Length: 305
Image 1 (cartoon, rainbow, N blue to C red):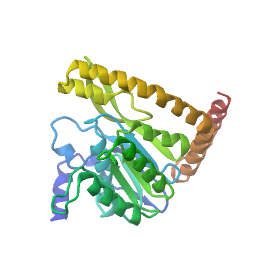
Image 2 (spheres, rainbow, N blue to C red):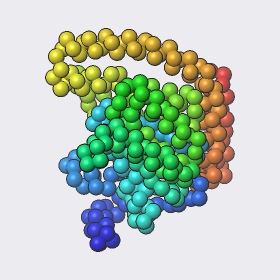
Image 3 (cartoon, helix red, strand yellow):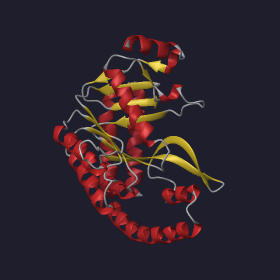
Image 4 (cartoon, rainbow, N blue to C red):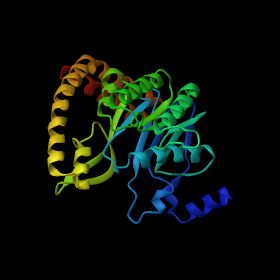
């Protein structure tokens, strides 16, 4: 049944839309122009494809962005493509390469469990405990919003601590969050990569691009904007902006200190990461020499800058 369903699925797609994945022993999970295998067939508009790259040198990716921008879809997409590749299927992407994973752990969704008398937060913690207690260096971990079902302080502390624990392994981790302060992990740990889903402001409304980009979210206080769109009274929204501005002033100081302290270490680590990944590149000798020359020049310029 599975094989027949899969054949029917890909037979209705253009021949180049599904490709044969590659596998390496210790290489990265590299997906170019990946698509959600189910969602792309159920929506009227064209599905926006996104890349994914997780390696031993950059094994944790933190994804931020507004609600409805595509974070949860992206996480599920990477997991589904990984599973399809491991069971011998062609995958919806332009290119895909994987190392063989021994477990795929997910912490997705918010719901309680009345039958077990378990609150939303307790359910979340039990799933997270199972994940952390069974994690291995060859696991793929996907976490969507950890710590949001309890107080802000406790939730942030738990999310940060769990990230640090997973960073002590070589597991590949995708971590979606609304907690902007978690992005400070990248200033302490150079193997943490920060990405966000692109959103622009059009006529004072959020215009979702569903496109993953490197760096920090480009829309400040998107939660307040969504609250305004949903109909929260203007006086409440304006007061929320004032409170947010005060919090920002304190947090910016901490972030600038961290980046100043660990900035050069992070630049060095990025160069080392690119050198490690070259062993999986299919470049000619001339192209490889040119790439190394450009990398050297870029490194020197960044150091002098």
